[in-house]
Image (cartoon, rainbow, N blue to C red):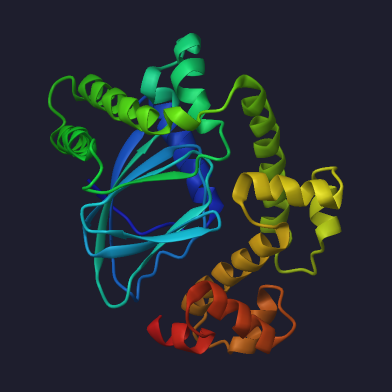
Length: 301
C-alpha cells in the first residue's frame, strides 16, 4: 500500500493519471492517515473513479456542493471528474484506504458496446456524484469482500494479481451499476451531460488560473463562450453550485494551503492573496465553508 497525503495542486492528479494509464495497469491502492492538524482540504477532481473505505475514525466528505460524514466501516464511491475533498471530524484521527481506478480498466479498451451499456451511463451522468454504502446496505458484504480482495492482491502481488484484481473490480462495478441502475439517463441526457462536463472543465481551468484576481460571472461565462444565465445553469446541473459559490469555495481552500505554507502571513495578507479585498467578508465566507474562523483554523496548522 502507498501511504500518502493528498496533493495540493491539480498537476499532481494530471500526472498521476498519465502515469497510471501509461503503466498499462491504471489502478492504485492508497492509504490516507491524517489528523486534525493534517487536514485534507485540497479540492480536486481526476479522471479516475475513487472507492474509499473508512478504516477508522470519521471523515467529513464534500462532493460538489454536498457535505456529509462517513463513519468507520463506510464505503464511498466517488465518480469521475467530481470535485471532492475530505477533512477529519472533531479530534478523531481518521484512516482511509482508497482504490483509485481509471474507468477503462473496468472493461478494457475495445469493449465499446459494454462500455456504452455499463460504464458510460454512470461516468457521463453529471447527476451521479457519489454513492455512500453503509453497513445497512444489503450489498455491503459484497462490497467489503471485493474491496478486501483488491487490497490483498495489490499488497502481496501474487502471480496473476493484475487479472485477479480486474475480476474483483468488475464485481465491484456490477454492484455500483445496480445501485444506480434505476436512475440512469437515456442517450439524450448523456449527450447533454457530456457537453456540460466539457464546459465545466474549461470554466474550472479559468477559475484555477484567475481565482486570485477580480473575477466576474461574465468572465467565467466568456471563458466557455456562453451567456451568464447558461453558465449558471451549467454549473447547477453539473456541480450543483453557482459559479460564484464555486469560486468562493476554491478561494477559501486555497487560503488554507497558504496558512500552512506561510504561517507568518497575517489573515489580511492571506485574504488578499486569494482574491478577497475585505477581511471581514473573507472571515464570513471562511466560516461558512470551514466551520471555524481563519484564526481558529490557523491555530491548528
